[in-house]
Image 1 (cartoon, helix red, strand yellow):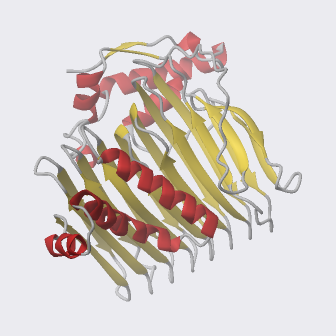
Image 2: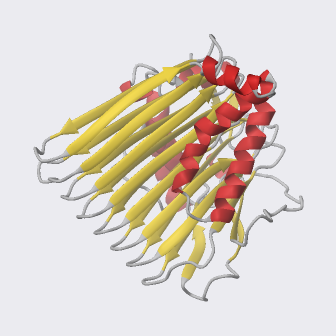
Length: 414
């Protein structure tokens, strides 16, 4: 069964006659296939068509909203701000950076169309996108403080769908730490985001994704990027608390000595389904990728990891590592992993693996003999399991804040 749509393209703020035909064409292309189902190999563990059909009856794109709430900032460390309301750029404050070294502007809905992406949700995004933001760091500039993207959502989003697109560009020898901070609401809505990343020679992008509170939300996010010589991309996915969340990352390591790190620590609870799907394409020699995905699964939650490492024939001296680990705390919980290697070079070091199991009974016993109650002993072991991800975050105040946030989520789930 397919969900019903009550879409009005004219409600899109940037709708005009010039874009109307293109939007209508893309929406028709989407409707032919609908939301992806398990018939699609990439969605075999996350049947989005079934999930949406079960939870939404009539999906609309009404973008009329009021937002008059006070925005509460994080006070744990100094940072710059970007404010998004329902996926659209509202304001920004780059007070810690030099003027004209970091550029932020609204991304028009007609931009951000990446024709190389073959994804039915991309048709939907191109048809209904309200835009997003475009962020660019200038050559030889290292941002003094991180930028936090505050993703706020209004109360009146039941059965709505939000489509937005973002672009991030780091010019040569620049550095940026970007934190996506999602602030959930009780509304039940869908968010479909496409993001393009361009990391030039010698540049470093650290991207941290964190969900502040639980929300009755269904998110899909597609991140595609290119990396130049001696560039670094580090992605930390710490999001939990959404009913459905799938993040797809497709990175092309196009020049020598580029590196890509994807690390995740998720704590999932009742009726939560989250998937991370990655494809790291080694297209040049002497590149490195490192992936470690960790899930704690409680109640009837469902965790999925699909990871692929592709090594082109010229990509000699590739060093690629991939590991997924799941801690399953309930018989009703489920974890699915599909690691893949596709290698055409012969002088490489590549490995992948996946493990899952229950909590260590001997470790629980040891802690209890030291006077720690069972509930607290389990929480300590869960934190220890997830906190390994933070070893790769060098900024002490950011690491402390993230550890505190994960601890709060663990306490909430137990």
